[in-house]
Image 1 (cartoon, rainbow, N blue to C red):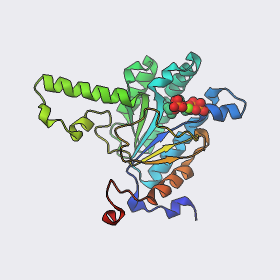
Image 2: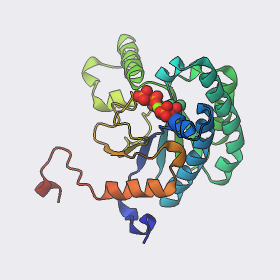
Image 3: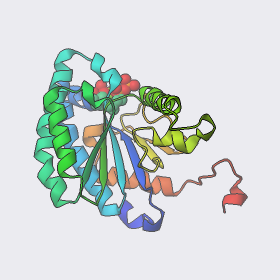
Length: 246
Ligand code: IPE
Ligand code: IPE
Ligand code: MG
């Protein structure tokens, strides 16, 4: 029996976030340049989104490029941006066919103009789709997102739109990029690194963490199913006792 047959479809995570890591090492292992790994990572993205759709996972959020990644060698950064432009352009017909809605979070205005425009175009084109919501975290830093939310709230307080006493977790959450999404219940990181790297710090407060040593270009929908199955075996207690939640 494969993983898919064992998954309980009534207990799916609504939102899965993924830190797609290991492209560079994958390429190096094959004696190729790092960008070869990024190119092959696109196949994994396609396959995993297809898997999420097949299962019925509504939200999938992919760490695609961090704010810290701007510090990589210029050639690699440029190659990633080029890859983004061509990939987004190529994928739009598939998004339309499969009812996928594209979304992006992060400091998008830091992206090169061509990349920004291609992204906005794809987001607008797919805006009416009602299937999987595929969110790309691009030029994303969770700490920056939190600071930005704090600033937005301060502006609203200053203008009188919001009362200080009305600031609570819900209000704060609404001011994050992810305000209109449920929090991820499952966070997957590939490549055997056991860290969060400034990703969705607020949102993963109670997410189940799943680490695999697989490198991202080797990750496929079956690996997603395996992670979901693992998720379903866990007892999510939210601070309560085992007896309480059962
Ligand atoms: C993840 O793979 C992709 C990005 C961060 C853009 P890496 O490029 O980090 O690959 P490794 O970790 O160096 O192997
Ligand atoms: C995290 O991977 C960012 C993305 C996957 C886009 P990194 O490879 O940049 O993370 P660190 O530097 O190893 O923490
Ligand atoms: Mg890495």
